[in-house]
Image (tube, rainbow over all chains, first blue to last red; front, side, top):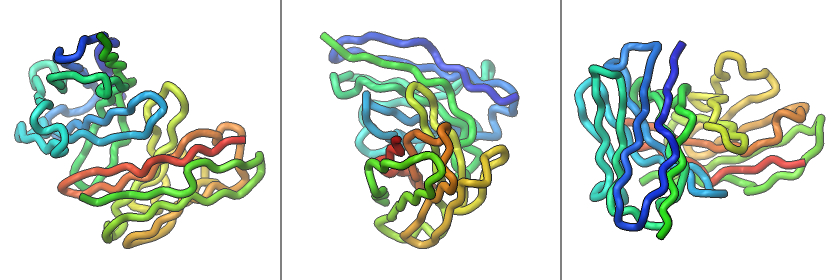
Length: 119
Length: 106
């Protein structure tokens, strides 16, 4: 069965970087992309972008383009999202989700990773 | 960027009610719209894709409608398990945007 298992919670200081992993199984990793979505405490869902495990191309929302790097490791079927220059308003649960193509929503999601940014 | 606006933000209802949530897009998204249900501490759960296609395993009391810029999610005969937050999401080759969410509460 398809599974996306994310890394554990992180506590960071302002200015730090965080790298969240999303280990996948149960499907052909390179046939899909991985979307990243975040949710601040008590707030709605915010799409950050996606990364194609097929052609290693990223599509990142403009507001994150200078701080986010999305990558994959096809040897371990794992996707990564690194967010740099953390601020307190980056405190959120970060989700990865599988994407088949541009015209399909995400059926499979990771369990979420809480990133807390606090001095 | 395509903006998605959901209404209402909060919907108070009772078991057995029929409720409707509206989602409006800032430009035509044809039928590229999904609805998700989210419960506290959990990842979103996909209910409907392509505006009206019910995902496998989703109860038939959920239905989606609309095209272009205006869409609805209707839950008929509301059940206790349906009290949650619902999000619409547009998806296309360039971006994916969520609505701000609708909390369905007792």
